Structure formats: structure tokens, C-alpha cells
Length: 400
Image 1 (cartoon, helix red, strand yellow):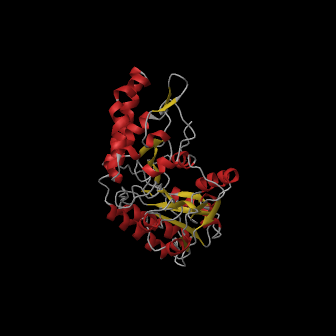
Image 2 (cartoon, rainbow, N blue to C red):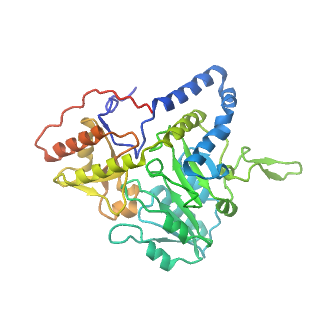
Image 3 (cartoon, rainbow, N blue to C red):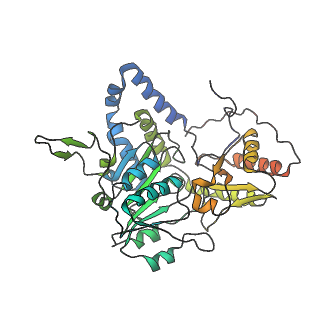
């Protein structure tokens, strides 16, 4: 059975931070592959698409980030890509790992578990009074004991952007590795890894890249690959040789991959990536700013937006209406948004006394009409003086 509660078309789709709406071309690419797979079998269908699967999607990611193709590894999620790479590092009791208050809970949980075995220290980089990650503090305290700096480019709960260039400069000529969780920023902001090199960048395809679920990836620098060995391997990347030895089949980032993948998802992802190269970054940033500034003017609505650089996401609560009722009212009025859990970014939301909030996220295909409708609904819902009308059934064509 399909739950019809939230299956009507949206008048305003502002849930790109959860999952973006795929274009018709992306959906058709997935459907075409699945049709072929159902006709000739999955192994033969994969062979028919071999160039795209083995080269094309890697080439598309390399072009998007201006990085070498051999630096790209595919995964089924951003979390698994991050975990698989970081797990390959050898950290000791002497080492320090830096995180920020905006760290995703999934990464923090991994580090806490690894800390119990390896004994390294975890230190949190403080924020400035304005809410930015304090780069000057990092410059004063950096030492060769800092083995890893984990930076969330844009957290899942707010659109604050942490610039990567100062951190790229910070770790230059040091043993310190720079790891960037770009899950929310990829597709929202241009990222040029030739101009601003990092050691590991992870993200997924389902958010602002507007690709299918089960698509994740990592961009892994040569020096990170030299420092890390994957803890999970299979015949996709390693092979036995006569005498019982093991041979590496790749020296590139693909050594962190496993052989099994959702081939249909990656076929669609390649289409989405090629379309993402045409994203209008300034338009998205402008709509994000308008949503944030207009929401701040609504009486009773609290917009939680720390920091000096923002895009994409706002997180809101209301003085007189709980987060869950506010979310349900927005959804009923045709505004797709999400009820987020403060425990998912615990060192910011929970520490700020925000156990739950409503997240609204602009994406590459968001329109001015969608912003206007969302603001209108927020104004009427928060006032409690007007009954929010049910959403009209208005079809959208999400074609590039």
C-alpha cells in the first residue's frame, strides 16, 4: 500500500537538503536501464553500460570538481564514503582530531567509536561570536599532533558556509589531513578542488545534485590514499595471486570501493551530474537569501542562521507553535519541508536548546513562486488567525 498522505504534488518544494527532485532526463535514464535489465539480466545490462559505469560517472564528477578522475571513488551514500575512507587511517593515542560544532552526528558517532580503540583525542574548534568556525583559533593551535581536521562545509541544519580555502592553507606542508563533508553544499556552491585542494571530500547525489538515492562518492587525494588502507575489500579492488599473495587492482581512489552497487542509480546520477554543471549558483544563492530575510520578518518565527556566509538552508522554530505542528501545517498547505532532529547536529542544535526544528531548503530548480508561497504559508500559519487552505493540485515539469 502507498500512503497517500504526502503523495500529492507540492506547490513549493523546499526539501532539497533531504532529497532533490530529479529531472525527467534523470528519471528516464534510470527507467531505460531498468527496462534493459529486466529484458536481458543485470550482468548483461551492466556490461552494455560499461563505459558509463566504469568511466562516465567518474569523468562527470571529476569535471564538476576540477579534479583528476583517479581521485574519485563511488559509494552508496555519503556516510559510507566518509566512514570507509577515514576508517583506513591509522590514528594513535598521540593524535588529535579536530571537529566543528556543525559536525554531522553520523561522523561524530564514527569518531567516538574509533576513539575507544585507537585512543586519539577529539577537540572541537570553537565558533566566533558571529557563529563562524574560528580559523584564527586553528592557526594559533595547529601542530603536528593534529592528524585530522574534519570540516562540515555546510551543516544539515542551517545554511552557514565554512570557507575551505583557509583550512586548505592551514594544512599545507603538514601531516594534518583535511576531511570535508560537502553533503549539503555540493550542487549549491561551485567547488574547485584544483584551486582549493582538500584530502577527502564526501557527498551524495540525492540532494542538490538532484540524482537518485543510493549514490554517494568521495574525492580522495593522493596523500590521503597513501596514508589510508581500506578496511573492507573485495575482488573489485584486490586479487589473489599464485602463492597466496594479494595484488592491488588499482592505486587510485577506487581502492575504497566495493564491487556491488546500484547500477541504475549511477546511470541516472551521471545524467544529473552533467546537468549540474549548468547550475546557476548566483540565482540559487539569491533565492536562499530572500527566503532567509523574508522569514526573519515574520512575527513569532525564529530563524536559526548563525555565521556570516549562508546559502541553501534555513532552520526555523515558532514562539507559539511547536515544530511538529508547524511542519504538518506547512506540508498540508503544499510546502515540502522537513522536521529535523537536533541530535543529528548535536553540538550545535542540542547545545542551543533546539531539540527539533523545521528545515526549508532551496535547490537548483527552486522558483520565485515557490519562495512566495512558502512565505505566505509561514505568515498565515504562525498568526493562527487564518485557516491555511489545502494545496491545489498543480503539476510541475522538472525538466532541464
